[in-house]
Length: 137
Image (cartoon, rainbow, N blue to C red):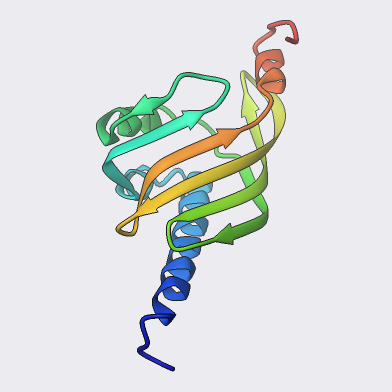
């Protein structure tokens, strides 16, 4: 029944899905202000092969480091959303150190109050290391 409290999780899930889709698109456009605005003040970004970045201010500094970098293509293959979590499977095609790199990634986004509180990405760091001349492994 419209207006019933049971409609709220679906509405929230749809809004969360849209937030993450717009967030991913903003990376392709290097829209740092939009990207940073998607986070809560206490947000954490954790690229699992690396150390986490804690707090919106630290995440903002990290995001701004990409402003002069040619954007890549982030292709979402599958995405599911609930009232507090969005997960996607995607392929990021980027250029690192002048070398094209393809990264299959699974992203997990915890959403609170319409903003990203936690963003975790799971992927193999080997292709990125190889772009900088590091041996695999």
